[in-house]
Length: 230
Image (cartoon, rainbow, N blue to C red; front, side, top):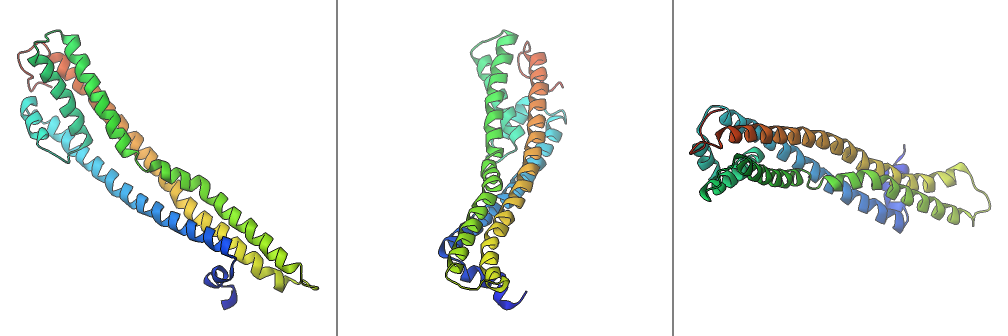
């Protein structure tokens, strides 16, 4: 492709509307890549911290000692916060002299479920943005292409003789918008699908922990204080 039909040249010679569409798509693409890198880092951190806490939890450490150490963490794993919320509610009910096992367990499970939902919402943050970019960007690019083609044909209507050489630049300028729309959409769709799978796996891990910890609390509900038994 010669210099006159380079991507930069096509964008510079496109109509103002097409240039506006391309600029918007490039900004959206930049924002989506920022979200993608941020999610890659945050979900990797969540997985590593959850694995670290699970090792500590199943090491046989006393639940009271583990709760005291977890309570001092301000940026811990989602599993830590779920454990802390369940343990906190369990201990509060014990302090209020609630002795019925079902009441103790039900309160702890409700607290852990509420914490689980908060953790899931945090992991899913900005995921809808990637879904919107993946679904809307091709149509925005197509709008720019259609507008550019209309603009090109209006300009050609004043010519007495139309050849492929006169039509090609205008069509090429318009098609750039579709190409950039796909450039913005494809990474967003791929990233959304990957992150959705990772979040589903993390949610299964959290739900499994809730059930396992609930069983531990049920076994220790009749004891004077939570023991280290697993």
